[in-house]
Image (cartoon, rainbow, N blue to C red):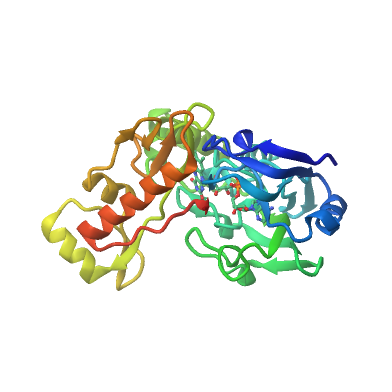
Length: 335
Ligand SMILES: Cc1cc2nc3c(=O)[nH]c(=O)nc-3n(C[C@H](O)[C@H](O)[C@H](O)COP(=O)(O)OP(=O)(O)OC[C@H]3O[C@@H](n4cnc5c(N)ncnc54)[C@H](O)[C@@H]3O)c2cc1C
């Protein structure tokens, strides 16, 4: 286990922000993790745990220890129960599941990042969320060194939320996740343009692989590839507002889109709100708002995290002033 000093994190975050970590280490086993956490030199230092770095905005050099969680392995426990180690790449796992005849996660194709971070914000796309297939996870409690099991209920999953973003933020390291997949071939094409894209491909009885390919094609046409333009996907969550508030907005904007949440609340696309306040495609030198997807903030090359964070705050203010809606950030900002 090699410890790097003053190490650039540019290759470890999809925003491609060139901040440095005072110390950086890659751990490939739980014993390595225990060892590094017990190291007297690092005991008092702040620590940041990283997977694929696709949901993080670094605004400064990190004056502590950055630990990249790189535990590998996929175990088929039988009856569709699959245990995946935290450092496995999410999309590679989706492809593995399809290749092995499973279905359940094909709608989550091409989401960047690793398995370990997937429960943290209960990743979701195209009508499916991680919680729909989640059974349990193993997590290392940093203070005690104990490994605890969390089932679906104890993770408190919600829309892009879990207990690991709230009460247990920074207190646990996720080691593995166990999911329940199926082999019934039943797919969900009801959300967004999946059915339309499959029709265009003349596929009328889609397999999980067909759905995965449709999702990949839709995502590739809409979202910037972090390998080409630095970004972290959706920067903001779609806000949930009261129906009465929504009706007020609708008087001025009859075209405002919405999704019913329950009898009294609706979800409004944050991208629509951002576009209406004029931020879509706005560019300020080497950073800005993506021209095709207003939810995505981008680093065109060489931007710093503080500027992008300030842009995010300016967008929040504009939306608050115009619509009286607070846009919550989805990305983890290291201020
Ligand atoms: C182009 C693009 C598209 C995206 N589309 C979607 C989408 O459709 N749906 C969606 O839900 N998300 C989406 N995202 C966001 C991102 O892919 C997910 O949030 C993903 O789960 C992040 O994984 P990661 O390994 O990169 O996490 P990181 O960015 O490395 O970490 C995210 C947070 O989790 C913590 N963390 C990481 N690993 C661990 C661990 N093992 N234990 C404890 N804490 C840990 C980190 O400290 C950080 O706070 C997108 C991102 C991009 C760049």
